Image 1 (cartoon, rainbow, N blue to C red):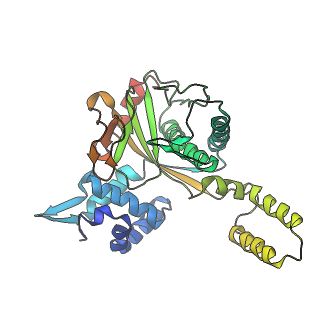
Image 2 (cartoon, one colour):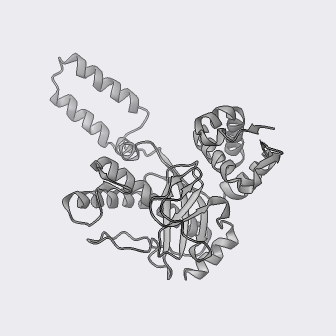
Image 3 (spheres, helix red, strand yellow):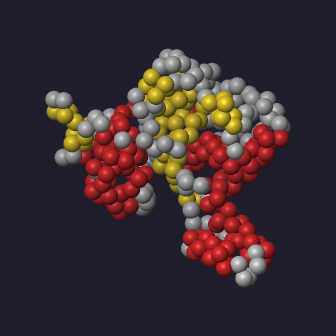
Length: 325
């Protein structure tokens, strides 16, 4: 039985290091039984999230001491993690559509074609770069694609996402446009997080944790030949006698040589954590400090992941209530 210190829960690296053998074994068991290949950091951060929130009662308490209940962790894997994990290839139609949408959205933001801001939300003084906005847009909307895939794979429904770019910032725009109630889908690249959120004005909030390459846009261009063409172009322009830059180009090529041009190898994982109905919770006020999150910067709904609804029956009720089923 593994003992968990409260300080471990605040330090993801320390947590993964302490439980490295257990995490490695859990990773291999999941791959063996379910064919889902999580890397150690992914499964470590997801496990940390479950321990922080005590989802599925994975923490056993003996006085003031905390221990990992391995049987409850296995139950979490079998009942919640695997059934609610969606894996999508980067050449999926909706992922390609998402990339095009995000590129157009980002160009419009810089050209003034939309009222969306190019400064960082919550830190208005920080002006973001084109690349950072593009990645933020991609990850931010990726959760909607995962929700669409998840619901359509498990229920006889058609989910329509909002792909329109407005010249105005539409408050309470429905992330599922054919739902009769306002649904907010929030994506988080932080697998260790424990808070689902929704802005004021929504009827439902859905939380999705997204595991993506560190540089998803660059990875996409590597695999669709865009990157190799850039290197070819550079080799044509740089004189062959320039040994320094020839060495640079060779090293760059060696890093991406395992990717065959036009052969998409990378997949994206989405963990559908569940949903909540905003009418059943009170919004958290600005300035409130929450564990593992910090200070809340604007009033909104924030719900711990262990209080989300996630079972098949729960999702069926959700779909019926929003008019999709």
